[in-house]
Image (cartoon, rainbow, N blue to C red; front, side):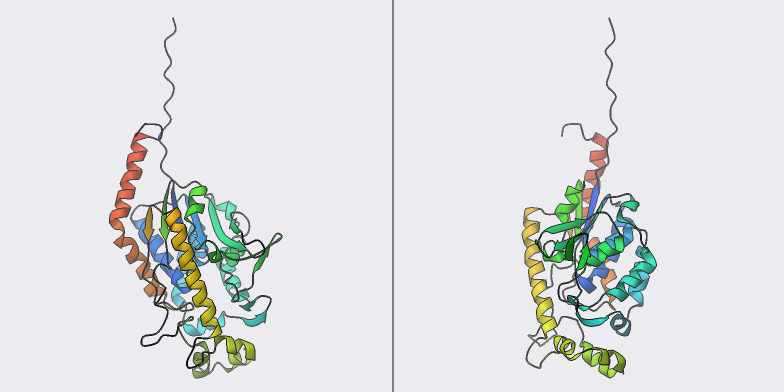
Length: 328
């Protein structure tokens, strides 16, 4: 009679942690602080998804270039920000975006998404079908550029046969994508949670989009060459009449409202395990020179969620001890 053979016991698997990073333009530097704080608390990320500036921050972290991104962000001032804005009113956008792409190439070169070993997706929108497109392979900088191609501001990006624009049109906070790519637990950093009603100056009912008057800044700082390059139509887009918002302000405020409503709807159907919401509603769309403040608030937002994050770590540790196949 043969002895019964005990089947080998599979070692328990660590729960996979997904990080979902939202859109947010200048508020995006908060992602840097949030990622750093989460790493200090002991989190490792097995899946990363990002929309717009979230795709940029997540991709730089995955590629080991978060320090470079932070150094660049902290170096920005208004004059430098404007130097990156290659103004034009053609090819589908006010800003060409080529100068920003050149800067991204300095740090990321022609790295490909699939070379970094973990699932990653940059959210984009197909301008023809309206479908949500996840860029999971290919040139990383190209994917990031497509993800932050804000309609009317940056031109869409053609990848394959598709014209792709900012993923915020359909998926500002990609929680579902994180789960679909294998995450058991999702931590979401939402930069748009408190922006409605705050994008205006004190004692004013007019929404401010950029956060500062670009034309006035150029005039006061002697940027005559940059002013001369801005044609009449472009000037009108950024100019604000005394009693109303500019065209740029209307466009971006409308997008903010849309992002807020889409995010709330999608979170109701598929909430993250931990929802981190930095308080950045007072940031203007182009106030990239406020990196220190945004990074600090990203860190602070994580620390405000420390009890929930500690519970999540404990659940992960318990899951690892008992193993996936053990009944709960």
